[in-house]
Length: 259
Image 1 (cartoon, rainbow, N blue to C red):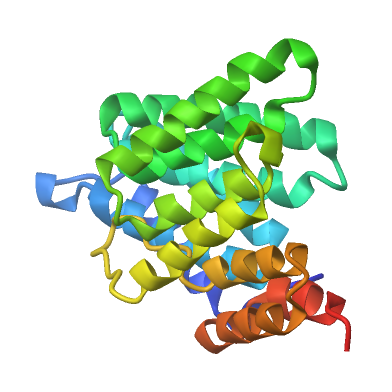
Image 2: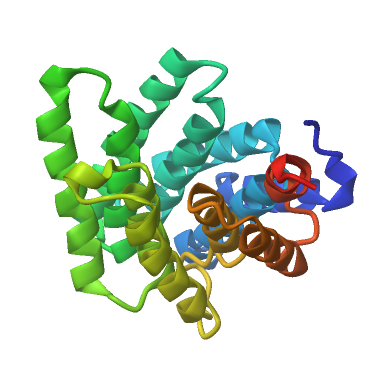
């Protein structure tokens, strides 16, 4: 699907981020603030994700790379580059699996650096999310699955009331066979917990704030797996109440439900 860029006015965000990253001359007060850059990345990536816009995500990745070069020791800037790479890789899994795996691997490297500089729960949870899709052989399965489990547990231990962490915990469970401790029943508990926590979630910029509508997209898919279509429809409709332009739910998940 193609995102009509004028619908959400992302060029303004992109222009602002680009402007912030332009080298300045003069007093120290003119030096770009990494926190403001991270906040702009937060906004731009969120808009691209909701709109389902690969081009927009790619543009934000380009800007995030510039930001990382400008602020190599800022953990949040590193986090947003890793987050944007995760989003793009996830969208490309079906159409370009080799490219997606390479992007997941790059996201892993970036998130490792982010955690070394400024460990936040979301970075650990994202690390788990980018490790899982890289399990493509029996040789790598044990090591990567153990690392992924350890990362999500670390994230939960750091902040058990973080809704993004609990949502990513649910995603991991949904994609893990029940014989290995996962399954839709386990995922459902995490998603319901996350949805409740999102009701009081209001992190100040530039801290991560994504996921409030997305949790209902995953909740709906979990209900589908549990053969509860009406509950799934309600979850999808709630996602669209929060983000009416949410392309994934509007154009893919909701139409896939039986009438």
